[in-house]
Amino acid sequence: FALSVPRLLRWATDALVAGEIERVQEVALLLVGVAVLGGAVRIASRVFIFNAGREAEYDIRADAFDHLSRCLELDPWHRQALARRARLLVGMGRLDDAETDLDRFHSRFDPTTESTIAQGLIHGRRGDDEAAVAALQRAGRMGSAEAHRLVGGWRLNQDDWEGAASAYRRALERDRSDHQAALGLARAEVSAGRADAAATELETFVRNHPDRDAVSSGAVQLFEAAGRPDLALRFRSTE
Image 1 (tube, rainbow, N blue to C red):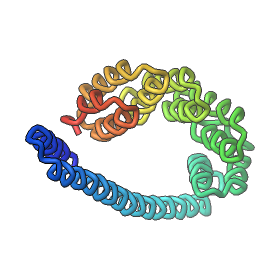
Image 2 (image 1 turned 30 degrees about the horizontal axis):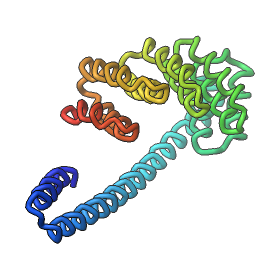
Image 3 (image 1 turned 180 degrees about the vertical axis):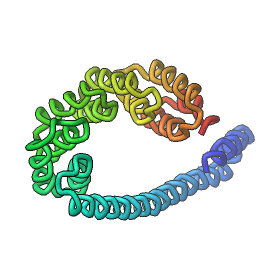
């Protein structure tokens, strides 16, 4: 659909030069039709893809939960299983059960990055952003790139572009291949009015990690949404 637009515009221009007003109107209607059809196809494809993704995620979580629960039946104080099941329970929306697992975990073991992230996510799900960020920052100080990335997401939601950029940079310092942190940093930079700097940083990331196709696709969507098709074009060849 995108490739047909330049051709239709050329036809419209040629018709204008030739004074063929009816032809121009026909091309205008074709442009509208292409836009509507393209939008419908895009929406339908996302619905089918996202629904399939949700179903797959649900199945994976259910299998992981069953496996961890069996581990805890054999050993109720299995350190990793307790922390990981708490994290899964948060994702499933079972916050009280997650807290029960964490309370048991912390009654015997020192906090780990996974248990601390789970605690932060529980605070976040309950609307206590300050406590959530504090817990995630503690996990970040333990060396977790994911925790810093999650802090970046919270800062973005609060429109704190500089705080978000700082958190995403810390995540990339811990894990230079974290493509989600790279895209998050770009979103923060774009929101702060530094789209060109964001594009340069993403190009460097793509060069260093050519297997991260999601970065190029995400960059195209990001810069198109920001009204910078010139920057989006720089990533189309790498999608």
